[in-house]
Image 1: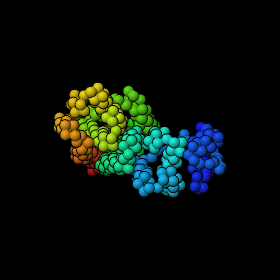
Image 2: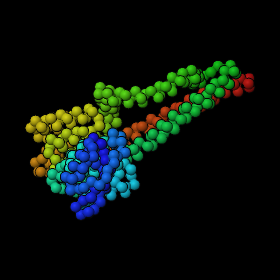
Image 3: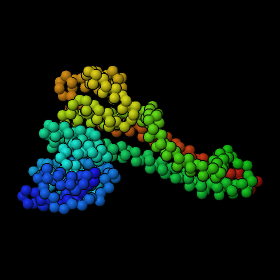
Length: 398
């Protein structure tokens, strides 16, 4: 199969341009003929389609907005996509639109076309679009998708903003340590060695550390480089990722934060899919797929299997033992009153409020620890500098 750029004429004698996938020109002509078009000219496209771009969440929001605008404005879908592909200032959005249009021209539905490009359109996205097509409510579903993506962007931004301060402080401390041990301390140690004075304990500690840095600095730098590489390698193996995810969950406060982030993502996705009209099987499967921590994902997969086996959602959550009784009771009431989607949204909102509070608790603990470490480093450095000088000055006076 190859992609062809073509010019064709329709029944109203209008020139139509586009890009479509076909095995050869004869196949291209037959495809266009089935659409009521007569091929005028064609040429093989220059796109390298195995290098598919990946849309960021912000770009996916913009793409969804433009697609919804086409559907609600009354503009023919293919014409709207053609304009969107040629006029979009964002190259990735333009390319994604071209990909989608090329599949639609073969007669596929929007959701089936999106399934061809999982790098561009996540599973929850195509599942919701398919539900919108089946229910005839695609415009509303696209609005729900935009709201969900915007929520996800805001949540990530809040987490990154909260992590910015400790990251800056740690970077500053690490830079200070590097400057002291690489540039300042070796010269100072040489002066003390030449003076042949007896060194106090803080200075001996610093001499030892500087000596280790001086003798093994290539290994230290290599270790600093290798640690994140080895971490990434381990994280991309099933056993390694499970061990890392389990270790993170066992950390005090940080494990609680990770659990709340994943639970919030799951329940928000569940509610969005539920409102779109998907069947429970697909809702549970797709919602479990958005959970990043494998240990938590296993818990939700057990819930999925239990529900598919005939259990109520609330009972499956309760039997898993991983969810608070209040949450289980809320889900049970939602099931009984027929307001499960609203109940799940409220649960996600509860997690959204708790996440910033948990981060504040973490930073309340981390900040004094960083201050103590920084103060201890400064005290050790000052003592290492001035105690030997004090001894030298005292010796001169005598």
